[in-house]
Image 1 (cartoon, rainbow, N blue to C red):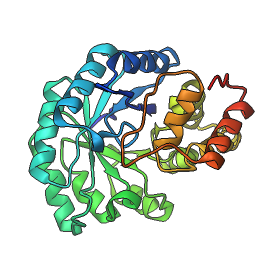
Image 2 (image 1 turned 180 degrees about the horizontal axis):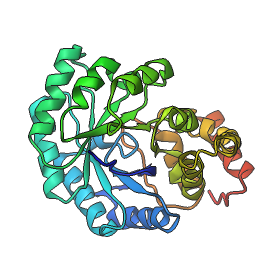
Image 3 (image 1 turned 90 degrees about the vertical axis):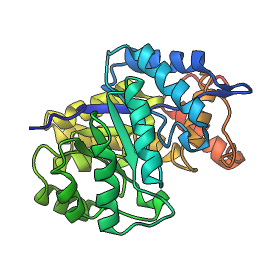
Length: 297
């Protein structure tokens, strides 16, 4: 029986960039903040980490630094997907060799593969590595969704551990749970869906909001895992204003802006992402102040 790579809250960590590339010192400070506040895993070089703007050398440097800095205290899951199956398999092998505990592999974007193509894509990648693979279903970004019946096939692969489910389609998710074995783990890929996904049987969240409020997002998942959904639902509602603000623009624009407003050196955004306009900036600032956070910028 496959065990989940983690249960609870995994932080999808941002990547601080400076003029010379990724700022590994600033990344270490952000990782310390996450670890000190008890997050259960780190996802590095995912969507929130702006992996799509990074060179292969930068990806390796950031993943390697994260693995060394975390030093086994929690699992490190490295984003290693591509719309090119061979390239994704190679990225996964590199991340595995760098010491990542798991590999996050997004559905192939732009190509818009069929469900058969998705099965062959993910199975080819999972065959190429020894570390657990986490599927990443985010059709709003890729243009293709993994069907519940496809999950049922992929769940049989010994190296496929589960899925970061960011479709927001709770109806399809119910069918996924009905079709898949118990050891196929589902994590929410949307902060605002955390309680709903866990109520259906999910094991936690890959969180953006935890970059700002790691202890609170960990508490939310702990309440869910303890089946205290009354308290979890109340906390989800309490977090909704900040959650909304951190997704008022394309991720990770708001969360990087928020971290910089809080005095963290989260660095600049890389094109084609750019800073938010005045109205969205004010919404982010107001949400931080609403939660009593020390805005300095």
